[in-house]
Length: 150
Image 1 (tube, one colour):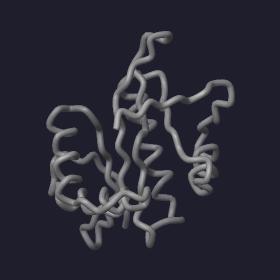
Image 2 (cartoon, one colour):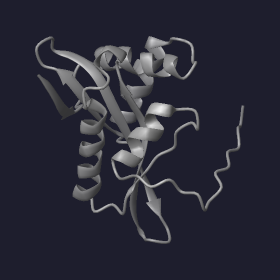
Image 3 (cartoon, one colour):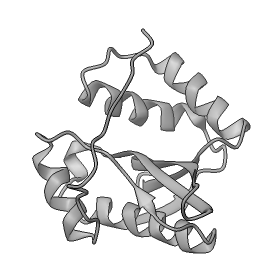
Image 4 (cartoon, one colour):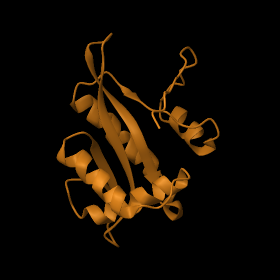
């Protein structure tokens, strides 16, 4: 049985383990301690909302979504950035990502936000199939720019 719930400072170490796998998926080096500190700071400072997918039989976190609040000046409303979405490989193709997206949409509605935005790599085949299937629309009219301060 899989359930989705808001992460409210349960054992941050369990979430950090899955967050570390997410970072490794994006070719970052493993850093569980850093992941734990990063997540703890986001939650303590109310800088993000995290929902977890939990395998209730094993009491194990098997996925998560992390959302950051933003604002749309033109709409004069809150906007959520769906920044991180990850499901452990052995649990994929079971509808868990869709469940995490649905709870994200509910957060958007519950906070009277104007929408959700996200970014994914052009070569993320699974994500680029998942997002349109969950009613996200690809923005082909705007350019995305990034300035790196490293």
